[in-house]
Length: 130
Image 1 (cartoon, rainbow, N blue to C red):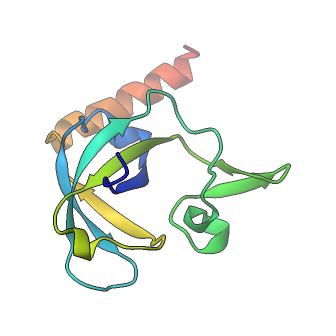
Image 2: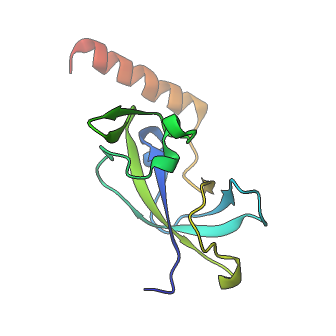
């Protein structure tokens, strides 16, 4: 739909299981113009992004995603997944240009104990050779 505003974002793998399609949140522009805009998740890629096509998000250009350059392509240093976001709200507040920003999304809660368990389990699996 041409009237729909779509934002692309990238989520680190460690947060992926906590997100779901249609989850709500807000996006803050790096331009610090206006108030945060309401968003919701339209889709989440099932496979990690092997290349980062948006150079303005790359760490080598002061972006938030750590990358290395290889054969003219930007390769993420850790697993990230592309998330498409719908911008809700007033059409007059929608940006007309590309802006970098940060999205804060609602996700499933996770206890500190469970997060520590997952980290320890992943280290044990990695060290055991599986």
